[in-house]
Image: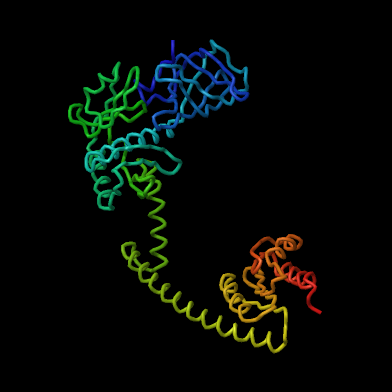
Length: 413
């Protein structure tokens, strides 16, 4: 006889006294099946319950519950060393009820949000996931993405239904064909018994779907549904949201963040978007000015480098800057070696301890110089024959590397 699943008749039961009916070993620990269980086994998108098993004074953790079918035993994975339990042991099973209830809120909230989107827009739920900080569903609208206005409408619609305190009914049918007597929005035929969860009036429900999960007895216990964002995923709408206590925690945290941002701008929360827009315009203008100034500096420095190299007939030259970025130094270096033949050029970023090597000599491979030597000085990097870059932990390591390269090239007498 398979495990009697207490949660099917009483989803609020947090513990039960029962007897171990079977024991098997998994990874060195006991996995037990029992005559009865309050543990929901993972399935239907809902995580399994977690909790404890106790025998006398001994208490062990249960990290996962599983089954092979809706009619089979429920197996409880414990942290008890293999051989701790045996068939016939009298035990007490207890779930982490807060964790269970949050998953119940999330699961029913997912049903109702999916149902609202199906009713409003014809979107079909093709995927469901309960994560640590969110719930997600994949809604198929044949390539069309939901607008912000449509998401707001769906959120409003589902919350109106939640606050209407609609009854939640789970019915069991012996065959798939029997289950079609209810207006299920997504027909998933399979062999054997099937459970159908309806929210609201059974003849005209807000939502009706085949599901083996555990749900509250009424919609009001979901509390609320809050949609966080929607993004494209394989041509579908992946909607991130949460329900009940989890959503409240997230909204509270976001409210504190918004409060701090408003304080930083010395404005009210409602004025934050306009203040941020104005700030973005200022930043854009500053970036434009910075680009113009950087261009001016590069042209001036290019002229100075070329003048010094040619006046000294130098075949090696080092240039350092605390202003120009490594990418800007690379562009400046290319401009220099393009006009000066037979030059080995070191462009040094003081801010990042990055050395960029460029050369107009065909007999010097910059990439090989970095690959063969940077590691000796704690550096890393690479590049091509005409240019390469190496990054170091300190300016001293970088300077030692440059000195070593100049000596190793052995072309400067």
